[in-house]
Image 1 (cartoon, rainbow, N blue to C red):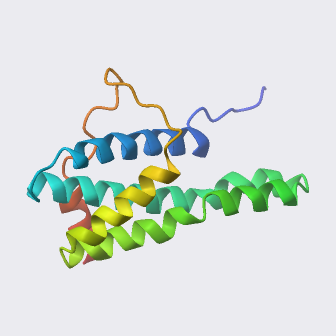
Image 2: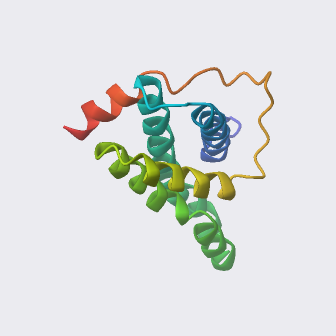
Length: 139
């Protein structure tokens, strides 16, 4: 029997989430005033950043098994910002502090400036319903 290969690994999930975040940031920058759509966008960005932060440890487990400690630590440092900015965005969203949200969104945009998302990408609109999902998880 051959090896079982998981094609939906954490790297693929992280790439999908980062592309979704970039698309959501673009959509958020088009907003003139905060509305229900804005809440969905910000909640999606925050939840996605927290999901990226959660799968960092899963990504480095294989490297640490092979004693690639430096590579694992470098990867952790490269993505250490994700959890902090995700928490910042969600806490600002709870208090409706849109200036802090804009500042956090700009920081996320700077971190993900090398992620390419075309207008024809198949990302769709994964942020629809993110605000309700966040509200239900928060309880």
